[in-house]
Length: 175
Ligand code: ADP
Image (cartoon, rainbow, N blue to C red; front, side, top):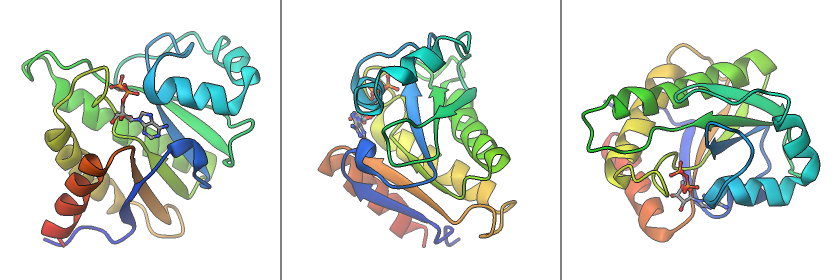
């Protein structure tokens, strides 16, 4: 079956994206970390940390929004992906929940264009190809409930060429 054409893969740094909502692959404290989380906090500025300190953390598979400060977006949606433990501890269900909850949060805020990083595939060790397939199939299923006036585009922002090619292949194989 063809996947929804509102999804696309791009190669680059998510902090340079101009969208309504930029998704952050955070940790449960929401107080910043390495990888994309560190890059987002550095680019957004220290006010982001101040707002995050008021949120009381976030559970795995859940999402919480903040303002975007110096990023060219309306909001940052912070989500906490699962740590990969071999796949037998509900990792796929939790990762799918991240994508769903981020989309629900964006819709609730009136954000129509969203950029996702490859959640859990860095420090958290989720196998990249499996994560890409799950991201595309989960977002695709969600988009069936959201018309283009609600969600106009979903960008999967890939930090390296290999991840980009993986997403391209998942998106094109299903088209
Ligand atoms: P996690 O802890 O959820 O695994 P990481 O930040 O370690 O989060 O990695 C998630 C993905 O984000 C990895 O594919 C990593 O290469 C990518 N990444 C790191 N920095 C950026 C960035 N500035 N823009 C987009 N993706 C990034």
